[in-house]
Amino acid sequence: MRFGRHTLDLSQPRIMGILNTTPDSFSDGGSYYRDGRLALDLALERARIMLAEGADIIDVGGESTRPGSTPVSEAEELDRVVPVVEALVNELGALVSVDTSSPAVIRETARAGAGLINDVRALQREGALEAVAATGLPACLMHMQGTPETMQAHPRYEDPVDDVKSFLAARVDACLAAGITADRILLDPGFGFGKTLDHNLSLLRRLEEFGAMGFPVLVGLSRKSMLGKLLGRDVDERLPGSLALALAAVHRGASVIRVHDVAATRDVLSVQAALAGV
Ligand code: YH5
Image 1 (tube, rainbow, N blue to C red):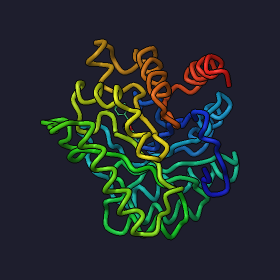
Image 2 (cartoon, rainbow, N blue to C red):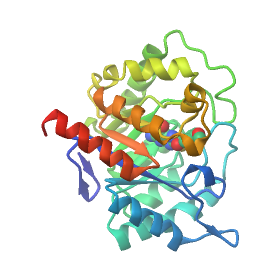
Image 3 (cartoon, rainbow, N blue to C red):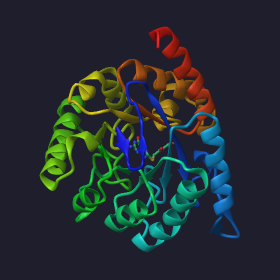
């Protein structure tokens, strides 16, 4: 699959390393702030480590979408994300994914050399479809029920797998109508975004049905609260559980695994690849 100037063979699973540029994401892999300002050199150093550990993509986010988080202004998001994308592209030559729902951030980061737009709102914001279409970049369409502020209050589905598939199929149609071609679409069931533990387990159990929709599947399971519920562990004690979920997802056909712990995930995928005979 083409990601701007980069190409990735998705017949083998790929690792997306998480690089948060929000000030409040300390438990989420690190905070790169100094004197209340985002420190580019610290963010760059973290990305350099993830690339050395075997990350194929660096996912840069400037908006916290964790449960209960509040929205950030577009200006603030641009301010945080664009310089980081520029540095990752120009200094590290990295394939950069941008975690955003904002048309302005989509346009400006594409100009800076980003290779993928990763939108937890599946390009539903006004102007987002058109912005991606104009960049020629691929997009990851993720399912979320509700909004980050309220999504974990009362998640409800007729059938979580069927409902999420229907939503994603409708978003694929919207992309195609907007001129985003089928070879530029990835799908993500959105683990933890308006889902109970049972919903998340059903989605993972039946993950192959998402691959059967005909697009590469991306999953984000790393350190998420389903592991807190399942294991009774704090966020910094969820690595073994995260690796088990990553392996389960790859086993069920996932193409891209979004993780905090790149080195450990790379080992799991290497063992899995050896067993698969590739
Ligand atoms: C995702 O699944 N997730 S941000 C709560 C946690 C830990 C981690 C401690 N962006 C996804 O990583 N993009 C996020 O509890 C994403 N898929 C895609 N495509 C949430 C996150 C997290 C939340």
